[in-house]
Structures are given as structure tokens and as C-alpha cells.
Image 1 (cartoon, rainbow, N blue to C red):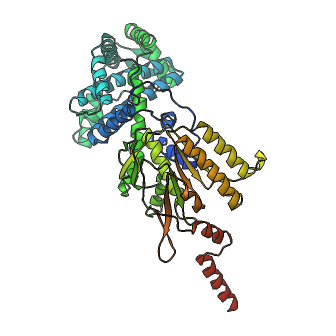
Image 2 (cartoon, rainbow, N blue to C red):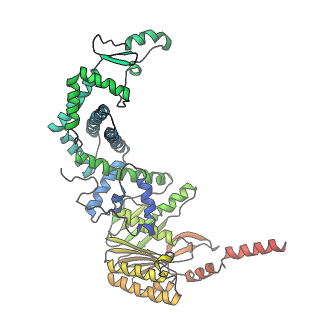
Image 3 (tube, rainbow, N blue to C red):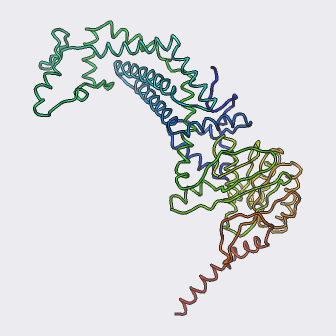
Length: 506
């Protein structure tokens, strides 16, 4: 089974670079937190590489569903932990200065490897898999254990370890000299137990047996050199085993252990959200409509959980003939959080993972493009408006009819009339391209564009922000609120001024 992957049904080239939209959508922070759960593995490129067909996405959905079963998860997690022990022993073997420590660590690694394979093979007989990926791997594993090379490896490693552990010898230490002998070797273990039994009571044999160790100091190394001379055949076999079996790890199994951490890390990440009643679901894909229910920005939700706050969930829907979603409303009303959430769901959907929503039906976009308001950079010698124009042009040049654009307060650095003129020109090109666009803006007039759906950040009767984004026509307050906020004339600002003035009068 060449090129088998538990992540990719079809061969896929990994993207080693972080997508440009990660920063705008806070996906960089989210992915950092996910991969930190499995720090021993290089998982970032898997989270950078999206899937481009439904077959691959369904393949991952089935694997993830199988691993959501606690019994399945625990068995594969234990198998991978055993495999990590193998890698730790091999790393120790490579770093050791002592010949025998190198060889003992290597032999121990081989035995742990074989035991892990046999463990998973045995336990998998009682597991019920629905996914094609896990079924294929277990079938591969079963066939692998029957191969002569693996059987010889396992038998040779087991026999060699038994022979090494069966070696007995006497140590005579006199003055500064150490003498090793295998003449009249005595096992004093039972004598010691009998001598001290009345002091400690019944002694379980398990606690009196010696444990195998791979740690060797310089004195023990000198002793082993003498032991080798007394048992040359066994140590010669160990030397040959070490030299001949260096590539004993099967590449398919090694790749599986590496790639399944992608699922483990994600499931570990969403566990704390689900404990706080933030639901995740498997997205469905459609070319007709977009429908997302009870969605939230998981980066913001993570901060809220830490501070014992509740994150407001939102819905989003667009019909087949609608291509542009215009989102208006007061500042700090949750608009940016809302579009970030949609972008996060889009990316996670294309990774074949669950998304932070109770239900999600979405297009299979070929790419995500984002342009958020950013601070002016002095070293670039360009204004914010110029930067916005350059970024927008790059996006429009690369956008296809299957792309999604997420724009947030672009052209806000110029006058209202100029911003409106530029925005209308951009919308015209977007409509010609036929792609989907979600645009946060203070310009209500953009909602008059054809194929447009209007969403508004809602406020309650007391003019407080509810952080709910509702589908309705613009209320004309977006630009007014931006001016009021700019000149510190909001109700909160005025109340604070009155309070300060009263204190001053007193």
C-alpha cells in the first residue's frame, strides 16, 4: 500500500507557508494553539493545506468520526504513545557516547516497536470502524505482521533481549580492581528476601525483580566490556543486530503515527469549547445556498472562556442569487468578529474538520481572500489608502468565481465620497467575477447594489450593542455612529463628561 495517508485520499502537495488570510481571520492564533497540543510533531503544514474536493473532505470526516469514539481514540492514542517511546529510545541511542548504551537502547526500541504493532493489531479486532482510512490502515497492519521481515525482526529482538537478560556474573571488587567472573555465579535475591522478610512482611515478587535499564555510566561500561569477553557470541549478535536493523521502522506506519496527530490535536483543542456549550458540527456542502447557524469566532470564544464570559453566536445565510453580503452597524457591534467567524468556518471546512456552529452548509470555495483595515507602516512610505488599493488589486487579479472575499473597513482612511466611489468600482468587478463577497462597511449605499444581502449589527432599545448580526435593511446609523464615536459623543462619553463635570463642581 504505497503512498497511504490517513489525511489524504488523493496525493496532495503540502503547503509549507501560512496562507495570507490567516492573520486577518486570527487563524494564525488558532492554529498555534492547536499544534501546541502535540508539540513533538510538525503539524502546521497540514493545517495550511486545504482540500479541493468533496471526496477528500468526506474521507477525513469519517476518520474524525471514528476517533470521536472514546474507545477508538484511547487505543490509537496509546499506540502512538508507544511509538513515541520508540523514537525517544532511538534518539537516546544516537546521542549516547557508550557503545553498549547505543545498542541496548536500539534493541529496546525495536522490542517496543514490535509490541506496539502487536498491541494495535490485537485491540483493533474489537473495534468497529466506519472510515475507509482506518479500515485500510488496520488491514495494512495485519498484513505487515505476517511479513517474513517483520517476523524475523520481532523474533530476533525478543530472543536477543532474553539472552542478554539471562547473563549472570560475579563481580569481585578489591582495592581499585574489578574482576568479572561467571564461575560459581550465585543468585542472592531469594537470600536477601528471606533475610529481611520478617522486617517488611510479605514481599510481592514484582517489587523484588530487577528492571531492565538502558542507562550506563562509565563504571558499568567497563564492567560490560569484561562481561562481553565472557559472552562473546551474544554480544556479537547484538552488534550485528544493531548494524543490520537500522531501518526497521515501516514508513507507512511511521507516516500514519505522524498524520493521525492532526486529528488528535484538533479533538483536544475543541474539547474545552464543547465543555462550555460551544457546539461544533460537520459542515455540508452546497452550490445553492450558504446557511450557518449559531456560529462563533473560536479565538474570541477562547478568551471568553478564560474570563468566564459567554460568546454570542450568530447566524448567516445567503441565497443562490445573492453574491455580496454587506454588513453595517455601529462600531464595536461585532461585525469584524462575525466575518472572522465565517472565514474560520470556511477554512476549517476545507480541512475536513468540524466547524464552530450547530449547523453549516457552505460552498466548496477554491480560496479565501481577505483585506482588513491595517495600520499605516512608516517604512513602506505608502499611505493606508494606497496599501488598501494595492492589496485589493492583488486580490481581484487572483479571484475566481469560486473564491470568497472577506473585506473589512477598506478605504476608511479617505473621505466618504471617495470611499464610496472606490467601493462601487470594486463591487462592480466582484460581480463580474461572480465570486462571493462579505464586506463590513459604514456605507449603507452599497446595499443598493444588485445581488446584495444586507446584515446589520443590532442594538437594543437602550442603544446597547447586542453583538447579534441580523439580516435586515441598513438603518442609516452606521456612518453616523462612526462619526459620533470619532468625536467622543456617544451616550457613554457624554454620561462620563457629565459625571466628571459634577465632580469638578463639588
